[in-house]
Image 1 (cartoon, rainbow, N blue to C red):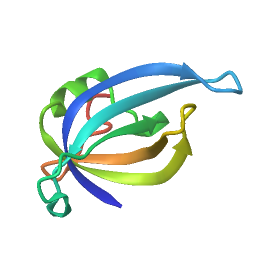
Image 2: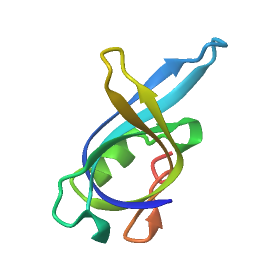
Image 3: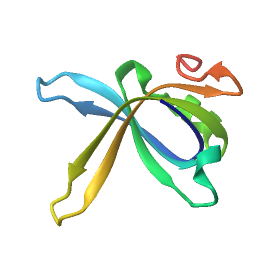
Length: 105
């Protein structure tokens, strides 16, 4: 699935998996700007893991800009207080048709 979005906020960090290995993770908050939105403000948090994570330089380059994100996985989970959460895992990110990941490495 492709998502056309404006990047509102993001961060990159190293996490430790259950197996004890280190993995880079980027978390982006994006606003959907695709044609299907029809004026509603839809914001999503998208996780990018491993090779799909962005470096700090790549993240800085796309903040406050429109990008196209290839969504790899969508799932729903229940919160502790009864709410439901949409979980999105991202793949390649494109800015003006060019791949963002790998440019800052």
